[in-house]
Length: 282
Ligand SMILES: O=P(O)(O)OC[C@H]1O[C@@H](O)[C@H](O)[C@@H](O)[C@@H]1O
Image (tube, rainbow, N blue to C red):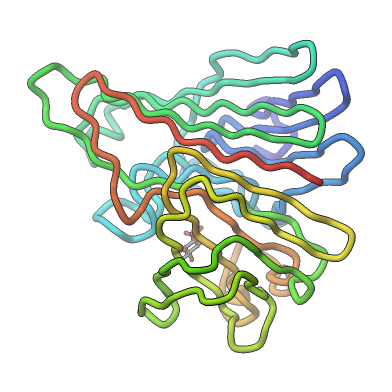
């Protein structure tokens, strides 16, 4: 399988905005807004193999973020084969909906009846990614609980020149130092010495707009339904140990992930949850 295999779906809006999705992992691989170049980082060493996670684009982490539970890291959704529900071009957008339901394989490690839907919409200079989960169990089944993230890999020209605004005053968990801290300043300079590698969960971001800036490019990110935001870059040392990413590519990406981690989502049978990340190139 590869980015242009039959398992890939390309969306093209009437205005020319484009996105490519893979059924493997329900994974957004590419986003090109109108008048803009590729906005997502996708590793040229991604494996695109059954059971493997793709490095880059927008992996769906579900039903477990990172190693916060007994499931494989970041859960099973990013390595499962999803199905295409619909794909259409509207008057001013293009939209695709992908679905993942429980199977023998998922029930063996996570005993719940569920349906996940990933909807991706491109139009103009905006991208909306929506993840919905429904508990499809019987009325007397146990509630299901999950953590999740849209693990968006932004492509950047040079990490040294990138800043993230909008996080001031928030508590975060620093996974590198294994400690909590307070983000005092509004500006997070991602490529600063001492900040790399960067692996932070900012709690309670909710619908605050975030601004990712570098020379001649500004991108706003806004989430709904997801309380937290993860900012991740492996830095040179950790990147060198990633088999599916060229060692120098850490300086060309920054993950800004819409996530629900601090307060896991709990659904009773029949209940649903929806989370969205919207990106706009200014
Ligand atoms: O290598 P993976 O499993 O795709 O994970 C990448 C990173 O994903 C981030 O979301 C986590 O905060 C990091 O701790 C992790 O290293």
